[in-house]
Image (cartoon, rainbow, N blue to C red; front, side, top):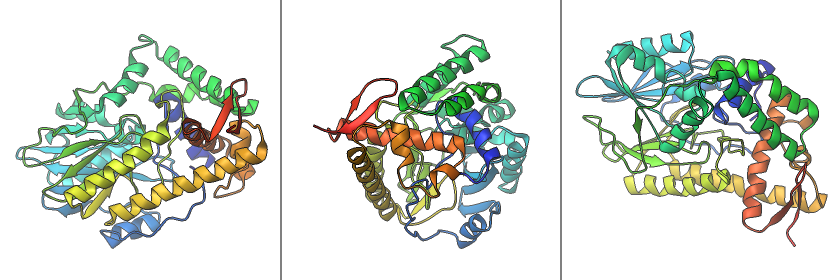
Length: 394
């Protein structure tokens, strides 16, 4: 995604290096226009448009929306959803690990009539820092359990345990993997050097809390008063989860489906082999879930709540089909080019050279995800090397 600030890019880069992915939801890097959806609350959309933090809101009986700020990031906030239980409260996502975010979460819970100590469960849609960062601090203050999908729990395990107790070793290994990927993409040396130099910032984000509970596809977490069901939606993250309530006809989508922007789906050192295939399959899954459950309102983690799930999913699918066609045409025209070269020739929301360097790196990794999908369908072929070169299919 293209953010508006180089400072934002640097902060997110640190989290990216440590999380094995992209911490923020997404971007309209392709420049594709967003199809209009109907906001569930016009004031919430107006706050987004005006660059403001939306109000804490009682969405419906027993359900609250709490905006938690994300520092130096154009997304500005994550929407934490608080679910009233027969005793206490559960939250879906927690926010970025900062004092400002913790204060906003605590105060938001206070407006809903709860203290931070009343939190019984933290259900995490995925382990990117803007969603998972505060989970450990909430648990320290409340004794709440933290639940994630096993695939994202594996990401945490990789960062916390595979390389022992040396945080610098963990960061060095993540950076090494990223450097190798960028070299195979044909990234310029200055981009690779920047990735390596992010290690000092990345140490701040390299030790997320260990989850307590694994939430599988179809599980119904024990939340008295709620009929919430988990839906596994990999793509943006290997273990991304959405949560549906058939009784309330709502769908909590995390970063999987957002009203305007599209989630980043990229190849990175901790992604699945074909994340775009995962994402497109997950879109079809969540579309079917929404129809079956009669979902009337979508509760995303960013921007604002909206009504038309099916139309939005269809638009996202069409957008990726258009992007795949553009990339396939670029491969045919180049007749042998690296991923970085191809990314530089695509349509973005601004000229390639004006995109901040770290954002170009993210765009490259998104382009790679599309190339991998095309390769898996036999529509392009890769000649391995340093860099790998991409050709039209024979």
